[in-house]
Length: 388
Image (cartoon, rainbow, N blue to C red; front, side):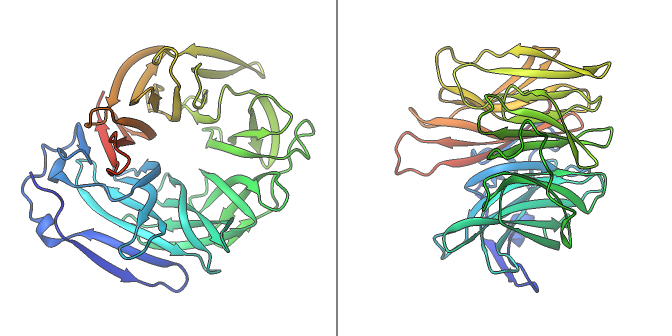
């Protein structure tokens, strides 16, 4: 096998956003060493289909379109520049590298130096969220609607917000943007469309109103409302909120900062990096919500935890994270571990971490970073596809 060949760099400048596209060269397209088709594969470890190398050096999120194409969001270093830019890479269901697109500036001239999230609508539009920076301060959100080839369809910019993520709504060209207000420090939750913010920012319930903090994560409920997870000063644990027609109701405490909703409406949350870990299952009965805690065994006494979670079509919970020096992805059903996959640094003394995860049909895809023991050696982004 060989490393990915010469890359063709195409520079296009649309009317507003500055965009850079990187695609495989013709020589790469003719490579007959393309793996064994859909199934288990890895890119980034020197042993994947076509032996392609993932270009994004700081992955933050990924999503999978209805056709099975993987969109990986993160930060990429453009040739000749020192600063990184918000980017997406596309990989096919069978592990073929499809190309990278970077977005450098917003319509107002803010530099898009960091990716925050990527989501896909039921009809296949991909939404990329980037953080805008001016004068060295992160103070705006940029949302780009992307076609299947990664090109820009539409864009919107929201000032005075530090974005944490997006949640897709029932309207394919509408999303919920959440994070924190830069000027007030208050949690920020706002609908956004291709024309910009719509309506007014969400007002928190009285128990949380006026407190600084942020919305950390959110997911769309199959009944049409949004599950949002908010963290505010003076409240010891994150709170789960039901947001229905922009009216928030506190459902109870979450057991961490990450949330995902199953097809049957069950809500799952996980903790972040800590020495105690758990997955919580939140269910509703008769208008009351209850929480079941699933203890999770990682490396005893070692720092570790979850970076992301998702729920597949069968209602099984998948998580990704770090345990001591290992990155991992795991699947749970009814509180029991049913499969596990470890990401290990190939270098003696190196470390690895799992960062983001997504599911599609019977496939699980996750991304991580494998670092050598020597700081002078570069770390590698690793993308893995599994059929557990």
